[in-house]
Image (cartoon, rainbow, N blue to C red; front, side, top):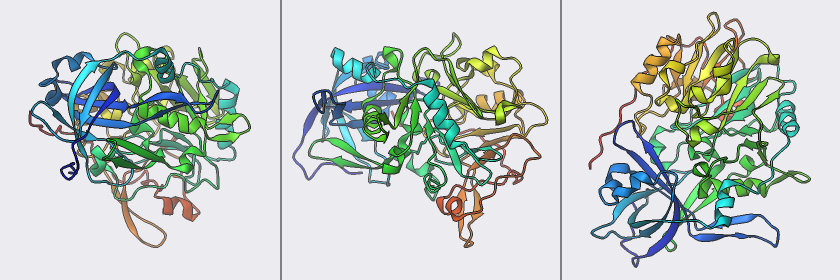
Length: 478
């Protein structure tokens, strides 16, 4: 791991949003998403810009031992003093980066104090003044991308510990993405051996992205690489220009505790600065007071926490139902949203599912709310998960609940890779899983080089599957 032994010791003060991921017991992880430069306008009436970014991650218990009050700081802002070198009271934290497997960088947290943001800063992280897009525009973007797509299927791509799904056409070309995630560097070992090129089919259709919510592992494929600056103790992220050259559909926060992080805000700013049509940027924000948006092959709906589900970001995003021509059983993509927060699952008892991408990488769910598959359909359940992840996903309790609900013998983990051969007989391993509406429908078949060269090929639906095995949380020293 990189340290700063060859450099003069440095300290820097950041404003940081606290995110605590609990593992179901007293342990878990803490992420500090930081910025150091004040939010300012790029021009007199120009967009707001954020700078001096840094994201840190460390085990919860190692931080609690030094700063016990941090457990009460979930979704709160704090002032963070960070140093390049350790002292007798500091706590070690990993710098979060993306893209190429860079050598890990460790910094040291010296002090944490509560912080109150200015009104201008709060408005920025709530996207308060950001324009909302008309429902008709979002529908039009989705329908245009799905034109002449033929027989549809849904792909759950292997991205390690993250999420990336897509509606694909009869030739395996992605037509609409649901999330565009990639495992960050702290889960780099969970990535597939060959990084897929999700944009290799752009000359067929430039597929828009429906973003389930703003967690980094659901959109970070948009980051080409990260570079840490030891002089400023900050990280610069370089965006993939092809990721910005498409529409992104997302929801703005509706509650203060759900505000976007500094890293997510910088991504939002990059999208708003990319004009795809006169007066229309790449960022299409969900209209206010809109429960669902229909398109030709299904619908999107706004997730809302209910009494059984926690009121966190995971349960306030977007879920997608794909339904061919608006008829027959649907395929559900959940992001990280638990089932009671998806309105159609609680209000429509006649809703039938042919397949589903499970919530939150197989993490804990409301056991009694798991929807049942329709008998006679493929009944395929996919869990997007990376082997050896630090959370112990998927949990055995979740696997048991899915089996009890009827998803027995049809559950697949994207981490369970199979060998695929491209047109030149080159072998590569991937866990890309196909979800179909009917057992009688042939698998989509690529007739061009784009899918194979991009690593977007699907494991055949008739291929033998590996029975899913629960993850194991690594033992951490305290």
